[in-house]
Amino acid sequence: MDTITHGIAGALIGKAVFRGEDMFASRPMNRGRFITWSLMLGAIFPDADVFRDIFSHDKLLIVTWHRSITHSLVLLPLWALLLAGITRAFAKWRKWEAPSFAALTGIYSVGILSHILLDLVTSFGTMIWSPLERSRPAWDMIFIVDFTLSAVLLVPQLLAWVYAQPEKMWPRALRVILVFLPGPFFVALIGEKAGAPISGRTVLTTMALIAAMFLLPALREWGLKIRYSTWNRAGFAAALTYVALTFFAHRVALARIHKFAEVDHLQVESIGALPLPPSLWHWDGLVRSARGVYELRMDLSDRSASETDLLAQEHRYYPDAPPNSYIDAAKRLPEVQKVLWFARFPVTRFHKEGQEAVVEVSDLRFARMASSRPAAFTYRVRFDTTGSVVSQGWATR
Image 1 (cartoon, rainbow, N blue to C red):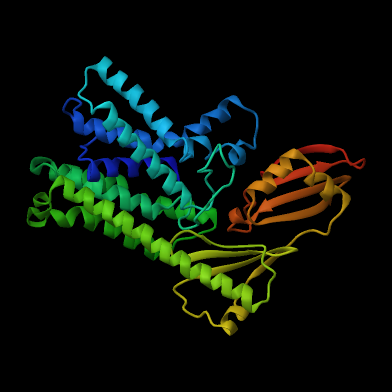
Image 2 (cartoon, rainbow, N blue to C red):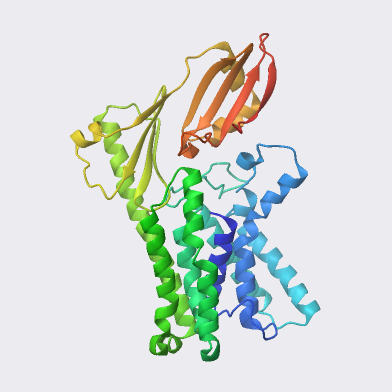
């Protein structure tokens, strides 16, 4: 999950569960604001591991280091205690009202746990047992960047802010609409570049919903009658409901890809159903067999899942290149072994470019969604005619 969404989720939990207040209120720092800030900071803290990239030239940290010790359930108490201690010291220095050390430890624990769980439901994998174990569990329920979930987490907080004070209701509502109304348009641009286009009708419908959500509660001022905490608790409940829906959608998609493998008599080494943007109806079914990976793009709104339908459904097959000395040499490299450890659905390719032999290992979890884009997480090794490595690293084109 992206760091911004983690922070939004932490702030919502602070307001909905721990009676937190607006982070940017004009009044001096109080206990309610302190709680919200602490939950938000705890929720984004695990992604602090990316700062190691600034001081390192190791391009494989994204697979060997990211989402490891700072995302660990084993080390969660340590991080919570450390953050609580720093926060108490900072509050004492600033002479701010703050929760007790024990309360802050609990708050930071919840924030960090929310981050770990929201990363765990994606397909990237999270080393929750680090440093005791280097496995990367992944629940494959939500795409790494899910704008729908981000909106579900953010909109109730904005509504609570807009309708907190009668005299500021209209200026705040109009300000929010002006800022967020173009959002669906920019999301559509991102989706188009990523190979997951969103229709113009969907963009216009979403823009209309944004305007309606922030203006309709102003009718007869019924939005002012809803308590600040109620807006946030409703948002928290909506987020839990959305995650539950992704759980059931994933089960349906996984059952469909299992049936596809069964009717096609595939020798399954690994299998999975991965979410695809822009909606929870779209899934990518992957089956790793002995010599390659099968891919079946699925639309769960299409209920046809009989054996005949599945066999007739268009799917792709990505075969491994036939073994040769260059591929064998590449797989012996420590860097390639790390990539293969990370990859759940690896495909090995081989080709010649002039006098150079090129070996590529791609993880189809992150395959390109548009033919004009290179597959993400493709590691490329170049050899000269003598079999020596000329270069190696992540493919950028």
